[in-house]
Length: 277
Image (cartoon, rainbow, N blue to C red; front, side):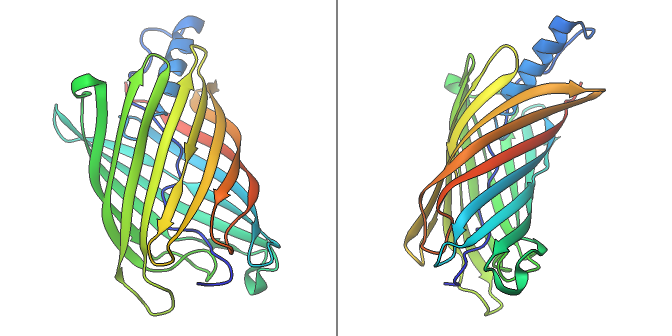
């Protein structure tokens, strides 16, 4: 295992949604209704909503001596496709842009791409019995890392799935995937990692959402967990003609490898929204 554990092959997006948008002309009340509907959609990872989140994470205490800081921007477009009246296909991409500060050697201060995680979810267009919303499909790890610390630079493949229920203002569910190496260039250990993201969100009628989740990864080779706990508050609003969601929050690393982040971190999120009419 390298002295610094860089971006892990995980899906780092906070929960996102599955309800309808606004309707009628944009009176203040109708606009608030539309914004609240979009806020609830953003709590469902397989919603029929085009969104482009830019998620900034700051972590510290990295490295054996805990003297490295990491800032990474996850670019996470989510695009749904209607396959039929009964089925949707949702694509979710995560491309990290990573920067290390501190004792990170030659890569200190550089901007590098991390490995891309690409997920595809086949999901029913309508909730199932009990209001359960679900999706399943493949997930792939693509070797797009441009630095040794920013990713594993390997090909990976595995299954992914999500299930959730939305009741009134509440959304509760979980997303999971598992990745195995399908090709190894010999410079890094094989990928054999399980990602678990249980999430809970509460959305108000004024389009504020409070969400709590973990984005936990278990490395089967190292037999170690990496467990950040995230608390984020977001607000859907409109700037000019563009609908977007703005959010900020904190994260705390409950567990992790010695070379991984420790203690408190921060998260900022800006999500561009493109609801279908």
